[in-house]
Length: 182
Image 1 (tube, rainbow, N blue to C red):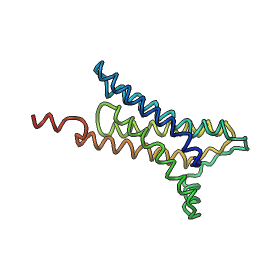
Image 2: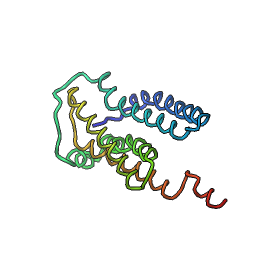
Image 3: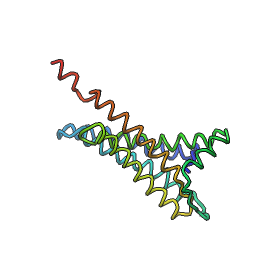
Image 4: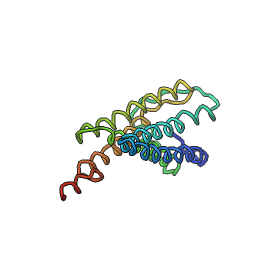
């Protein structure tokens, strides 16, 4: 599972800050050439991928000393264990696995051109595929591959995609409400 540590958060911060600056620069340059929103969304997607890959794979490569690995294919096993312990660390880990993928689902939904359902499905499917690939890679690196991580990451992508699709359906940020009044 993703273990959230203060050191991990500090190592992600520079990537997130550079990513934020990249999004703003991409938006500005894109606006000059008439593609501001789309360019910024691509920059945001690359930033999401960089942060997720650094937290899930990069930190493993840098800090992991090897191990026997393993695979947990029992859905809910680690989620129940984390909730039953009552400890803050395991619960924070569950929330972290969800929150890490919310931006990815959001950006994927915003990049999808049409339809509420298609936006939600695109963001959710991308989150699922990336999470499954990460768990497979972690297993190859000697860590435990856990189906619960895939479930939680996919849930995070779904939440982000659903929220973005809902906002777009309501016309928030699309300029639809201003055009209809004019």
